[in-house]
Image 1 (cartoon, rainbow, N blue to C red):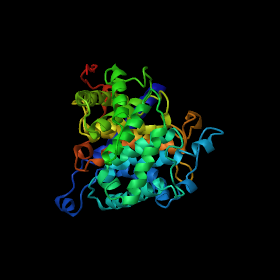
Image 2 (image 1 turned 120 degrees about the vertical axis):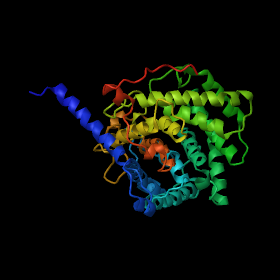
Image 3 (image 1 turned 180 degrees about the horizontal axis):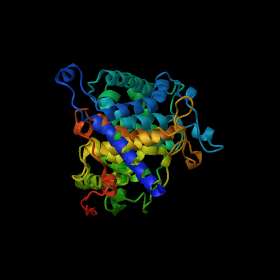
Image 4 (image 1 turned 90 degrees about the vertical axis):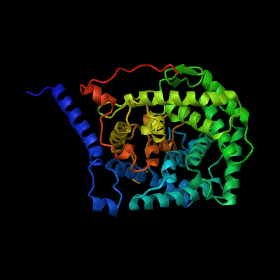
Length: 422
């Protein structure tokens, strides 16, 4: 008689084999003649692009036509649909662009992927035009609500990650409207938490755009996060540590981008920059270890409805080619692919028209905090940053490898893990 334990073990083995099989397919060499005819696109990358299409298409197509407000549903906590409707469209667009940006900026050789990329570049620029034009039906209410500074920051993050596609081609009027929109968010007073980085990111964007920027807002955000470090690659969200994914959702990726964008106004900023990167590398290693052999991760803390956006920092460090020595790009690819597949294929993740629904594993509206609405969910795009790497990069082209927890639970003898002193 087969025991429940044996059945569970068998299920885990089959899931892991299936997850790794996708990566293994990407390692099969093509013939010389086929390689000359067309670039070989790894199977995992094909799947990621399919996920990009499924998640992004409704948002980008609608905003390119100034129809996002008219077509996107506003799912939110009972009685809050009208209130969240003031900010949810900027959330959807800004968060989506922050994750898509490295791919939009990259050179893609595969014809079908390049065609999709070309369309999304045009739609994204049209969205920037429509979303920042006060006369447009899709104007995104910059400065009207506190939430607008959050998603103005994500919008800036996208622009900074793809300046050649999301800034340089913009016409003069759109640039001016974008600057005014960002400046309008200055009336929002951020709280003593990760919100300081949203204001700082907006200022970094204005700096990049050649406008006057408030170095004091940037300095305060940097100083406070320097004080809020709690050890082993992790910051508190304010004065206290929180068991959630905000080190990845916001804190570490934004700290890295801000310090890379603004000119150093003090010796502290310059000295802090390499420290921030080293801490981020350690946190990326921790994140990779959070992914179980079954491609699950702990449902801990708030904002879980951002789904695999929880791995923003791991994806960012992968894009930067700064993964720790013990974490190979191939194993990160396989782990993220398995997580993405497990979450995106869950019934109820999309509504009947293809919009994301509130939930972590399917449709779970009770998991959405009062600040969560349809647009919030598009922070899942943050996991897609490695699409900015060419398909020939080892992240995509290397043979499939099990991730750390799969190795350990599979009985492999792996080196012990140790805290970082950075």
